[in-house]
Image (cartoon, rainbow over all chains, first blue to last red; front, side):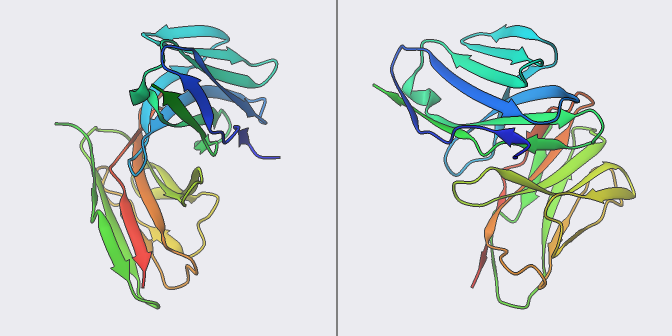
Length: 111
Length: 111
């Protein structure tokens, strides 16, 4: 079982719609959760961090964490073509001083 | 401006050669990381360092070496023992909350 799992996509949504990206993780001791956006040929950039159960909103982005289900999600409201990128889920386990990434979900926003 | 500088951006290596990728940060972060990304893949951890003069192997350390003599610098050497070194190499540093900030990456091609 992979430590961090994501559907590779592509996930296609029309412009203005809500994009929903999902991630599951295997280590119940995980404490810190992140979403990164990576444009083709570029390095990842951090867009959301979440550390406790529930929702965290930042502009058009909402991260949701459910530790009981070992599940993290990212919602992007009013999706724009500029949101088209690969979204990487990353997890830090408390006992290990490292951050593990999923393989990413490719999002395509159709104008 | 604070950030992470990787060099070179593009590098070509002949079979049997060692090459060193540079990574410098001025964010005053203690922790630094090297990841490898292959086309269509997620990020895989090569080495990480939480403090000067100390570093740990990640998931794919074979064929690589690092040093951490200064807080600001974490160079990665790709040795001839690495059988498939062609990849996109990403250096990052992190806050105490495990938020990673990446350099622009170095693209290594074996001729």
